[in-house]
Image 1 (cartoon, rainbow, N blue to C red):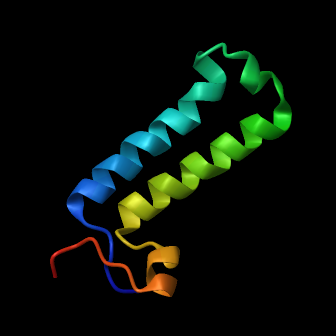
Image 2 (tube, one colour; image 1 turned 180 degrees about the vertical axis):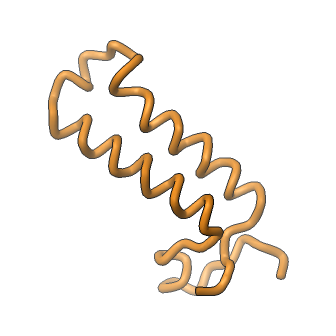
Length: 70
């Protein structure tokens, strides 16, 4: 796969991934009392971290979006 995620996008995805992974376990918010919401947050967090580290996003590829310079 070609790189299609730029540096600013990578940082944003990484931070969002960490927040989504941590929120259900440390926030104490009533929203995360539901198992399904916790699972969705964890899956979304993992996806954000993987796309950040891999520097490629499958949805960006489908829609032809590139946030990197090269």
